[in-house]
Amino acid sequence: MSQAQSNAYIIEIHDRAAGIITRNERGFRFFSSERLFDSLEGRQFRSAREAERAARALLSEKGRRANSQLFAN
Image (cartoon, rainbow, N blue to C red; front, top):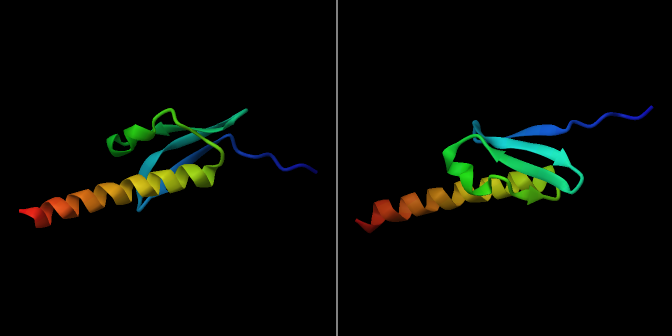
């Protein structure tokens, strides 16, 4: 008995819906659901985990930038 795999997944980071990834013949394509993650829009990933890591890294980077701007003043 084969188990069907889903063709779409929601990527959530800290209770925020970063986007949806859909499976295609080359891996997974990212579709942003929040402006913060728009730079990942349309990007191709080899795995769902890779897409999640990219979204987490982007959120972490934005947080570091915001903190450095707060302390620069």
